[in-house]
Length: 60
Image (cartoon, rainbow, N blue to C red; front, side, top):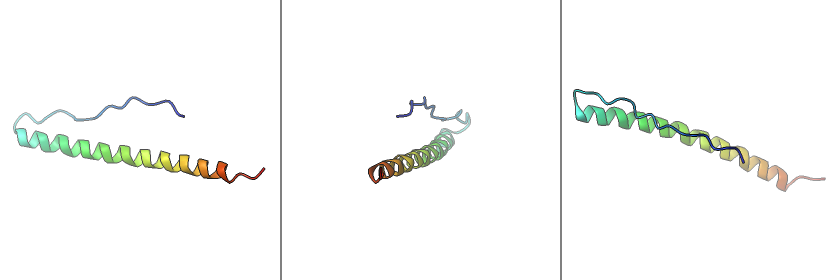
């Protein structure tokens, strides 16, 4: 198992002028970060699945 990496959620600085705009900016940044993180986790899972299949069908 690989060591876990610390994660920082990049909310960014809110826009001072408009509360709704701030929420929208933070929400957009969070959504983008979550998509990136999910893609990474999915790729790691595929690697783990491939290794598990390879070891399961390994012929000595």
